[in-house]
Image (cartoon, rainbow, N blue to C red; front, side, top):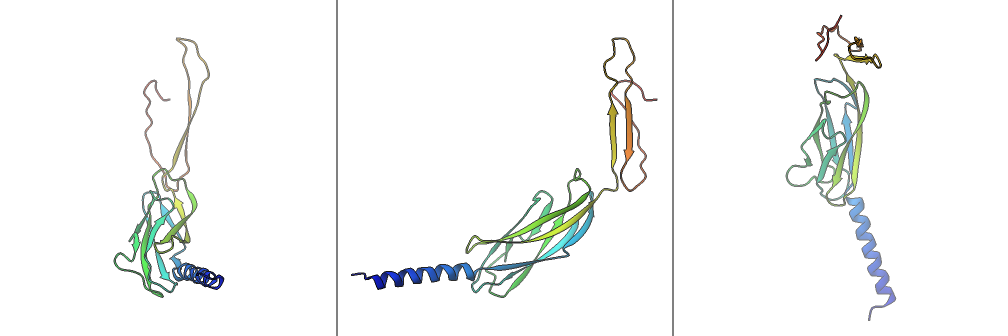
Length: 177
């Protein structure tokens, strides 16, 4: 018969195995540089070092925020085999902002999910997006006009970029003066 002592022993062993598995598969991520800048029509790169700080071999799946603007290679660490305890591997990260990305400073996250435990370990980087060419157009509506009257729209053009701009304006109807 299973005694109370046997039940306590089984529960203790199960708890220790669970704790060992959770503690056995930890990771540490370091990003370099932690801050960079990029023009909208270019890219900047980072390196993320992933270290298996646990006590067992593991494989980590790598992902990021802004997944349409950030590319990570490789997407799995290691690509083949497992990452041994104490072993590190570096992945390359490229931030290539979308053309409509507004100028400013953004924080992004790189995640490494342990295949052994499902735990996610993260690091953050920042990127400053610079727009060299940035022309803004605003149109002031004339309100209502009667048929046959002239409708005059006022168009404001401003250059908030860092370079001088030359541009040509056109419209589907009417003329510019």
